[in-house]
Image 1: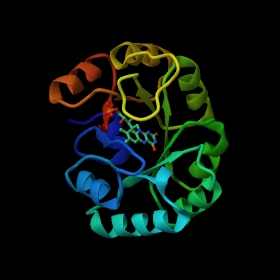
Image 2: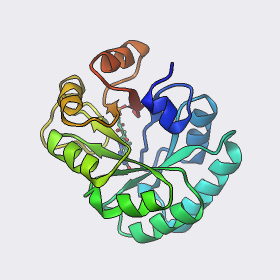
Image 3: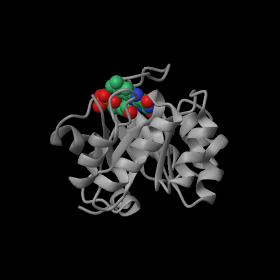
Image 4: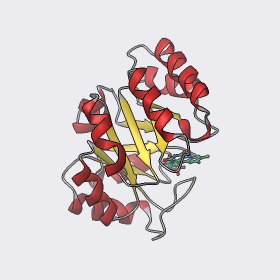
Length: 195
Ligand SMILES: Cc1cc2nc3c(=O)[nH]c(=O)nc-3n(C[C@H](O)[C@H](O)[C@H](O)COP(=O)(O)O)c2cc1C
C-alpha cells in the first residue's frame, strides 16, 4: 500500500520499528529495513563512538541504507550525536523528549527527514510549526516514558489528526494487523511498534 508515509521513507509497509534505548541497535534496525519497514537505532543508551559504529554497521547491512536514529533530547551528549548523524549521512531522525525547535532546522538543512514524538495536541502543533515532516503520536499504552496526559492511542490519533496536516504515525499498544488497521481507520498513515 502507498501513502504519504511510505512515500516519505520509500518503504513498502508503513511500519516503523520503535527506537528503544538498550534494545534497538543496528541488527534489529537493519532487519526491519530489509523486511520493508523503517528500522530505527535507539541512540539514547549509546556513547557517541558506539552510535557511530551502529550507524556504520546498519548502512552496510541494509539493502537501501534507509533507517532512522531515534534521539531522546534529554541525552547529555546530544551535540556529538547530532554531529555524527549528519556526518554519517543518516537519512531520518526521530526526536523525542524535548523541544522540536531545538534541532529540526539544523537537521533539515542537512537534508534529513525529521519526525518528532508527541503525546498531546499542543506539542503536535509545536512540532509542525518547527517544520518536522511527520508526527509520531504516542498513546499511554506505549512502552518507555509516556506523556503526562495518559491519553490512550485510539483517543489520541483523532485529536492529533484534527490538529496537524502532516502525516501522523500512531504508537502505543499496536502489535497486530488489526490494531494497525484500527489506527489507520482513525487517520494514522503509519504505525510505530516497540514492545
Ligand atoms: C524498552 C523501551 C525503550 C524505549 N526507548 C525509547 C527511546 O529511547 N526514545 C523514544 O523516543 N521512545 C522510546 N520508547 C518508546 C518507543 O519508541 C515506542 O513509541 C513505543 O514502544 C510504542 O509502543 P509499544 O511499546 O506499545 O509498541 C521505548 C520503548 C521501550 C519499550
